[in-house]
Image (cartoon, rainbow, N blue to C red; front, side, top):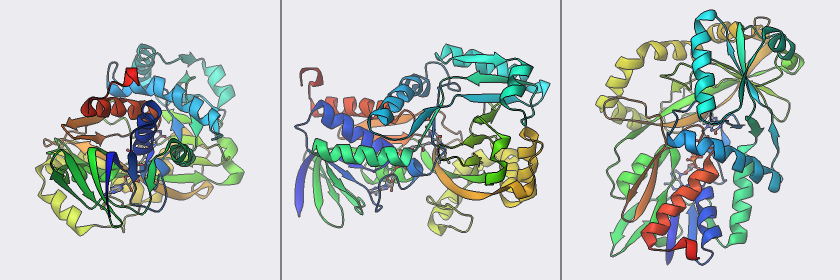
Length: 406
Ligand SMILES: Cc1cc2nc3c(=O)[nH]c(=O)nc-3n(C[C@H](O)[C@H](O)[C@H](O)COP(=O)(O)OP(=O)(O)OC[C@H]3O[C@@H](n4cnc5c(N)ncnc54)[C@H](O)[C@@H]3O)c2cc1C
């Protein structure tokens, strides 16, 4: 069967679903189909993350991340409240564990303020009162952080999309792309779509989809797994707030943090280790084809040269539990190995340039008939509704639609 659609969205994670929502809310007359290869919405990054609605503290002022996180976070909180998805403004603490980290803490406070985030340096007594079991010489309190359940957000978006008239297809991988006149023909196992515009929100596979659709993506996706541990129920009281270390500005996603979740569990992590498959949730998940491709890619060699020390540390901590425990004890000295157990993982789709740089900001590229999301790491879940609106604006322009008049 072959069907003509205005927009085909590849990927039923937060970004694909949010984009379809933004399209149909502005232009209910459009025909929009969302293709998801898995049997459920949010099966990858959107359903395997820390569930934090970030404040916008860390990001370079003026970057897309900074612009979309602050406003996007507030929009996400409102969305959760309106759609009966659990959400709670928890705030968070960023803790310096040595005086050498104090300049980093001050720089972070300054950056947060530049991004419109409410931050306050806590006195030692205030900090000790809020976190009696956490070691630190100083802490920042960040008011605008919240917790939710992004897998539930995905389900709420899918339900809303049904009401808005979207065609939603689970178990429907986009298999191939062929240009045909002013349309792109997308083959799936069940049908063929002839789309005026293609929106690629395929996360870990987005570079491959972009290439298959005829683009030459400027970056490649490298999968980095983030592994979690959880604190056993009897010891959850050791931490009351989400607690983060002072980040390394070059590698902000590193550094073990501790997050009390909405269901009462307390998660530790995620770390960042290379995944050996795009959906490599465990060390034993290995994709020999991807590995062979990566090993031939000079970007990997550049990356390894630049970050080998961090890589060795992260991999060692992943493989040797006592090293992981030792790191957590820097923040929570009373915690013992038996107080924690391993607890799942997620895989980040991280864009890397040809010369081995990790791309920090979101990357959304446009061709005449497609929009490709080529880098949407954290806080893209936080900002997903905003990113969806931005992509929708690009699509309207491509389709020559005047949305203000719609
Ligand atoms: C460990 C971890 C912790 C994180 N913590 C946070 C956090 O606390 N807060 C935050 O804001 N962000 C966080 N993030 C980032 C956030 O999860 C992602 O930025 C966000 O989920 C990206 O959404 P997405 O829709 O782009 O990707 P995904 O959710 O990965 O969706 C892509 C979808 O495309 C589908 N797909 C791929 N190929 C095809 C195909 N050929 N045909 C059809 N479908 C296809 C996949 O199956 C997948 O469902 C975290 C990420 C990780 C991994």
